[in-house]
Image (tube, rainbow, N blue to C red; front, side):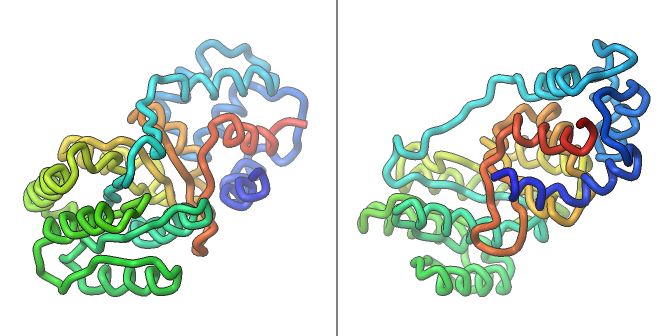
Amino acid sequence: MLGFLKKAFSKTKEAIREVSPKKRNKISKEEFEEILLEADVNYDLIERVLESLPNTISRTQAFNSLIGVFQYKANWIDPNEYSPFVEMIIGVNGAGKTTTISKLAYRYKQEGKRVILGAGDTFRAAAIEQLSLWAKRLDIPIVATRQGHDPSAVVFDTIQSAKAKGFDRVIIDTAGRLHTQTNLAQELKKMVRVANKAMEGTPHRKILILDGTQGSSSINQAKAFDEMIGIDGIIITKLDGTAKGGSILSIADELKMPIYYIGTGEQPEDLIPFKANEYINTILDEIFI
Protein backbone atom coordinates (compact mmCIF):
# COMPACT_ATOMS: atom_id res chain seq x y z
CA MET A 1 0.00 0.00 0.00
CA LEU A 2 2.69 2.49 1.01
CA GLY A 3 4.61 1.65 -2.16
CA PHE A 4 1.59 2.58 -4.27
CA LEU A 5 1.19 5.81 -2.29
CA LYS A 6 4.82 6.77 -2.81
CA LYS A 7 4.33 6.20 -6.55
CA ALA A 8 1.14 8.28 -6.54
CA PHE A 9 2.77 11.23 -4.79
CA SER A 10 6.20 11.06 -6.44
CA LYS A 11 5.86 14.49 -8.08
CA THR A 12 4.44 16.03 -4.91
CA LYS A 13 7.41 14.65 -3.00
CA GLU A 14 9.78 16.15 -5.58
CA ALA A 15 8.13 19.55 -5.04
CA ILE A 16 8.54 19.18 -1.27
CA ARG A 17 12.25 18.35 -1.66
CA GLU A 18 12.74 21.55 -3.67
CA VAL A 19 11.47 23.54 -0.68
CA SER A 20 13.04 21.35 2.01
CA PRO A 21 15.89 19.25 0.53
CA LYS A 22 17.15 17.91 3.86
CA LYS A 23 15.05 15.87 6.30
CA ARG A 24 15.16 16.99 9.94
CA ASN A 25 13.62 16.26 13.31
CA LYS A 26 11.96 19.68 13.36
CA ILE A 27 11.19 22.45 10.87
CA SER A 28 10.10 26.05 11.20
CA LYS A 29 6.50 27.10 10.85
CA GLU A 30 7.44 29.27 7.86
CA GLU A 31 9.04 26.33 6.05
CA PHE A 32 6.02 24.11 6.75
CA GLU A 33 3.79 26.82 5.31
CA GLU A 34 5.93 26.99 2.15
CA ILE A 35 5.80 23.21 1.74
CA LEU A 36 2.01 23.15 2.02
CA LEU A 37 1.68 26.00 -0.48
CA GLU A 38 3.97 24.20 -2.93
CA ALA A 39 1.79 21.07 -2.65
CA ASP A 40 -1.33 23.14 -3.58
CA VAL A 41 -3.02 23.27 -0.19
CA ASN A 42 -5.56 26.11 -0.02
CA TYR A 43 -4.07 29.16 1.75
CA ASP A 44 -6.99 29.65 4.15
CA LEU A 45 -6.66 26.02 5.24
CA ILE A 46 -2.91 26.44 5.72
CA GLU A 47 -3.56 29.39 8.02
CA ARG A 48 -5.91 27.27 10.15
CA VAL A 49 -3.49 24.32 10.20
CA LEU A 50 -0.64 26.56 11.35
CA GLU A 51 -2.68 28.50 13.90
CA SER A 52 -2.16 26.13 16.82
CA LEU A 53 1.41 25.09 15.94
CA PRO A 54 4.56 26.42 17.62
CA ASN A 55 7.31 28.24 15.70
CA THR A 56 9.31 25.01 15.50
CA ILE A 57 7.29 21.94 14.50
CA SER A 58 7.91 18.23 15.16
CA ARG A 59 6.57 15.39 13.02
CA THR A 60 3.96 14.48 15.63
CA GLN A 61 2.72 18.06 15.78
CA ALA A 62 2.56 18.28 11.98
CA PHE A 63 0.69 14.97 11.76
CA ASN A 64 -1.86 15.97 14.40
CA SER A 65 -2.56 19.29 12.71
CA LEU A 66 -3.07 17.69 9.27
CA ILE A 67 -5.09 14.66 10.38
CA GLY A 68 -7.52 17.08 12.01
CA VAL A 69 -8.62 18.16 8.51
CA PHE A 70 -10.18 14.72 8.02
CA GLN A 71 -12.05 14.64 11.33
CA TYR A 72 -15.48 15.28 9.88
CA LYS A 73 -18.55 13.07 9.91
CA ALA A 74 -18.93 11.38 6.52
CA ASN A 75 -21.73 9.11 5.38
CA TRP A 76 -19.96 5.83 4.53
CA ILE A 77 -22.16 3.28 2.78
CA ASP A 78 -21.54 -0.47 3.05
CA PRO A 79 -21.94 -2.02 -0.45
CA ASN A 80 -22.48 -5.47 1.04
CA GLU A 81 -25.82 -4.37 2.48
CA TYR A 82 -27.37 -4.20 -1.00
CA SER A 83 -27.78 -6.65 -3.85
CA PRO A 84 -27.16 -5.46 -6.43
CA PHE A 85 -25.19 -2.43 -5.25
CA VAL A 86 -25.60 0.38 -7.78
CA GLU A 87 -23.02 3.11 -8.31
CA MET A 88 -23.31 6.07 -10.66
CA ILE A 89 -19.98 7.56 -11.74
CA ILE A 90 -19.98 11.30 -12.37
CA GLY A 91 -17.41 13.87 -13.51
CA VAL A 92 -16.32 16.17 -16.30
CA ASN A 93 -14.95 14.74 -19.53
CA GLY A 94 -11.25 14.05 -19.21
CA ALA A 95 -11.27 13.51 -15.44
CA GLY A 96 -10.71 9.77 -15.91
CA LYS A 97 -14.25 8.42 -15.44
CA THR A 98 -14.01 5.55 -17.89
CA THR A 99 -10.61 4.39 -16.66
CA THR A 100 -11.81 4.61 -13.06
CA ILE A 101 -14.90 2.54 -13.87
CA SER A 102 -12.62 -0.15 -15.30
CA LYS A 103 -10.51 -0.03 -12.13
CA LEU A 104 -13.57 -0.37 -9.89
CA ALA A 105 -14.90 -3.22 -12.01
CA TYR A 106 -11.54 -4.98 -11.86
CA ARG A 107 -11.35 -4.51 -8.09
CA TYR A 108 -14.85 -5.88 -7.52
CA LYS A 109 -14.18 -8.83 -9.78
CA GLN A 110 -10.99 -9.61 -7.87
CA GLU A 111 -13.12 -9.63 -4.72
CA GLY A 112 -15.32 -12.32 -6.27
CA LYS A 113 -18.24 -10.04 -7.14
CA ARG A 114 -20.28 -10.31 -10.31
CA VAL A 115 -20.13 -6.94 -12.07
CA ILE A 116 -22.13 -5.34 -14.88
CA LEU A 117 -21.46 -1.97 -16.53
CA GLY A 118 -23.88 0.58 -17.97
CA ALA A 119 -22.61 2.91 -20.75
CA GLY A 120 -24.69 5.91 -19.69
CA ASP A 121 -22.56 8.53 -21.45
CA THR A 122 -24.50 8.35 -24.69
CA PHE A 123 -23.48 11.88 -25.64
CA ARG A 124 -20.09 10.67 -26.89
CA ALA A 125 -19.64 7.65 -29.14
CA ALA A 126 -16.02 7.44 -27.93
CA ALA A 127 -17.20 6.99 -24.34
CA ILE A 128 -19.41 4.04 -25.29
CA GLU A 129 -16.63 2.49 -27.36
CA GLN A 130 -13.97 2.96 -24.68
CA LEU A 131 -16.10 1.48 -21.91
CA SER A 132 -17.10 -1.44 -24.16
CA LEU A 133 -13.43 -2.16 -24.86
CA TRP A 134 -12.69 -2.22 -21.13
CA ALA A 135 -15.65 -4.54 -20.54
CA LYS A 136 -14.32 -6.92 -23.17
CA ARG A 137 -10.80 -6.77 -21.77
CA LEU A 138 -12.03 -7.50 -18.22
CA ASP A 139 -14.60 -10.07 -19.41
CA ILE A 140 -17.45 -8.14 -17.79
CA PRO A 141 -20.91 -7.68 -19.37
CA ILE A 142 -22.04 -4.22 -20.42
CA VAL A 143 -25.35 -2.63 -21.39
CA ALA A 144 -24.71 -0.12 -24.18
CA THR A 145 -26.60 1.63 -26.93
CA ARG A 146 -25.81 4.04 -29.76
CA GLN A 147 -24.71 7.65 -29.46
CA GLY A 148 -27.62 10.02 -28.90
CA HIS A 149 -29.93 7.48 -27.26
CA ASP A 150 -31.58 8.18 -23.92
CA PRO A 151 -29.02 7.50 -21.15
CA SER A 152 -31.84 6.89 -18.65
CA ALA A 153 -32.93 3.88 -20.71
CA VAL A 154 -29.40 2.47 -20.28
CA VAL A 155 -29.69 3.02 -16.52
CA PHE A 156 -33.03 1.21 -16.36
CA ASP A 157 -31.92 -1.72 -18.52
CA THR A 158 -28.63 -2.16 -16.65
CA ILE A 159 -30.27 -2.30 -13.22
CA GLN A 160 -33.08 -4.56 -14.44
CA SER A 161 -30.53 -6.93 -15.98
CA ALA A 162 -28.49 -6.95 -12.77
CA LYS A 163 -31.56 -7.82 -10.71
CA ALA A 164 -32.71 -10.55 -13.10
CA LYS A 165 -29.29 -12.19 -13.45
CA GLY A 166 -28.06 -11.88 -9.87
CA PHE A 167 -25.20 -9.42 -10.28
CA ASP A 168 -23.56 -8.01 -7.15
CA ARG A 169 -22.30 -4.68 -8.51
CA VAL A 170 -23.67 -2.23 -11.07
CA ILE A 171 -21.45 0.62 -12.30
CA ILE A 172 -23.05 3.25 -14.53
CA ASP A 173 -21.15 5.85 -16.54
CA THR A 174 -22.61 9.34 -17.10
CA ALA A 175 -21.90 12.29 -19.39
CA GLY A 176 -19.73 15.10 -18.06
CA ARG A 177 -20.25 18.16 -20.22
CA LEU A 178 -20.24 20.74 -17.43
CA HIS A 179 -20.17 23.63 -19.91
CA THR A 180 -23.84 22.88 -20.71
CA GLN A 181 -24.67 22.76 -17.05
CA THR A 182 -28.46 23.14 -17.24
CA ASN A 183 -28.92 20.31 -19.74
CA LEU A 184 -26.50 18.08 -17.87
CA ALA A 185 -28.26 18.73 -14.55
CA GLN A 186 -31.63 17.73 -16.01
CA GLU A 187 -30.13 14.63 -17.61
CA LEU A 188 -28.42 13.49 -14.41
CA LYS A 189 -31.53 14.13 -12.31
CA LYS A 190 -33.58 12.03 -14.73
CA MET A 191 -31.00 9.21 -14.60
CA VAL A 192 -31.22 9.20 -10.79
CA ARG A 193 -35.06 9.14 -10.90
CA VAL A 194 -35.09 6.29 -13.41
CA ALA A 195 -32.57 4.31 -11.36
CA ASN A 196 -34.91 4.58 -8.39
CA LYS A 197 -37.79 3.32 -10.55
CA ALA A 198 -35.72 0.35 -11.69
CA MET A 199 -34.80 -0.44 -8.09
CA GLU A 200 -35.92 1.63 -5.13
CA GLY A 201 -33.12 3.42 -3.32
CA THR A 202 -30.68 3.41 -6.22
CA PRO A 203 -28.19 4.63 -7.11
CA HIS A 204 -26.84 3.67 -3.70
CA ARG A 205 -23.72 5.73 -4.29
CA LYS A 206 -23.04 8.67 -6.61
CA ILE A 207 -19.28 8.98 -6.93
CA LEU A 208 -17.58 12.06 -8.33
CA ILE A 209 -14.30 11.60 -10.20
CA LEU A 210 -11.91 14.51 -9.66
CA ASP A 211 -8.78 15.06 -11.74
CA GLY A 212 -5.86 15.40 -9.31
CA THR A 213 -3.91 17.53 -11.80
CA GLN A 214 -6.56 20.24 -11.39
CA GLY A 215 -5.63 20.63 -7.73
CA SER A 216 -7.84 22.77 -5.53
CA SER A 217 -9.70 24.17 -8.56
CA SER A 218 -11.60 20.87 -8.84
CA ILE A 219 -13.51 21.86 -5.69
CA ASN A 220 -15.79 24.15 -7.73
CA GLN A 221 -16.62 21.24 -10.06
CA ALA A 222 -17.49 19.11 -7.07
CA LYS A 223 -19.79 21.75 -5.65
CA ALA A 224 -21.57 22.13 -8.99
CA PHE A 225 -22.26 18.40 -9.28
CA ASP A 226 -23.26 18.18 -5.63
CA GLU A 227 -25.85 20.91 -6.18
CA MET A 228 -27.21 19.01 -9.19
CA ILE A 229 -27.80 15.60 -7.67
CA GLY A 230 -25.95 15.25 -4.37
CA ILE A 231 -22.58 13.49 -4.34
CA ASP A 232 -21.89 10.67 -1.87
CA GLY A 233 -18.12 10.49 -2.20
CA ILE A 234 -15.04 11.11 -4.30
CA ILE A 235 -12.32 9.29 -6.23
CA ILE A 236 -9.26 11.38 -7.12
CA THR A 237 -7.39 10.41 -10.30
CA LYS A 238 -4.06 11.15 -12.00
CA LEU A 239 -2.22 11.92 -8.76
CA ASP A 240 0.89 10.23 -10.12
CA GLY A 241 1.16 12.98 -12.75
CA THR A 242 0.97 16.07 -10.57
CA ALA A 243 2.78 17.89 -7.77
CA LYS A 244 -0.59 18.98 -6.37
CA GLY A 245 -1.02 16.08 -3.95
CA GLY A 246 -1.69 18.49 -1.10
CA SER A 247 -4.97 19.46 -2.76
CA ILE A 248 -6.52 16.37 -1.14
CA LEU A 249 -6.42 18.30 2.12
CA SER A 250 -8.27 21.21 0.52
CA ILE A 251 -10.81 18.90 -1.12
CA ALA A 252 -11.52 17.11 2.15
CA ASP A 253 -11.77 20.37 4.08
CA GLU A 254 -14.15 22.04 1.60
CA LEU A 255 -16.39 19.12 0.67
CA LYS A 256 -16.36 16.97 3.82
CA MET A 257 -17.24 13.86 1.81
CA PRO A 258 -15.70 10.37 1.88
CA ILE A 259 -12.66 9.99 -0.36
CA TYR A 260 -13.00 6.37 -1.43
CA TYR A 261 -9.99 5.77 -3.65
CA ILE A 262 -7.11 7.47 -5.39
CA GLY A 263 -5.88 6.61 -8.88
CA THR A 264 -2.16 5.93 -9.19
CA GLY A 265 -1.74 4.99 -12.87
CA GLU A 266 -3.42 3.71 -16.04
CA GLN A 267 -3.72 -0.01 -15.30
CA PRO A 268 -6.87 -1.64 -13.82
CA GLU A 269 -5.05 -2.43 -10.58
CA ASP A 270 -3.88 1.18 -10.13
CA LEU A 271 -6.59 2.16 -7.66
CA ILE A 272 -6.04 2.14 -3.91
CA PRO A 273 -8.35 2.84 -0.97
CA PHE A 274 -7.70 6.26 0.50
CA LYS A 275 -6.54 6.29 4.12
CA ALA A 276 -5.88 9.72 5.61
CA ASN A 277 -3.16 8.62 8.04
CA GLU A 278 -1.15 6.86 5.31
CA TYR A 279 -1.55 9.84 2.99
CA ILE A 280 -0.26 12.29 5.60
CA ASN A 281 2.62 10.02 6.61
CA THR A 282 3.68 9.73 2.96
CA ILE A 283 4.01 13.51 2.80
CA LEU A 284 5.72 13.83 6.19
CA ASP A 285 8.23 11.12 5.25
CA GLU A 286 9.75 13.65 2.85
CA ILE A 287 10.09 16.32 5.53
CA PHE A 288 11.08 14.61 8.76
CA ILE A 289 13.69 12.05 9.73
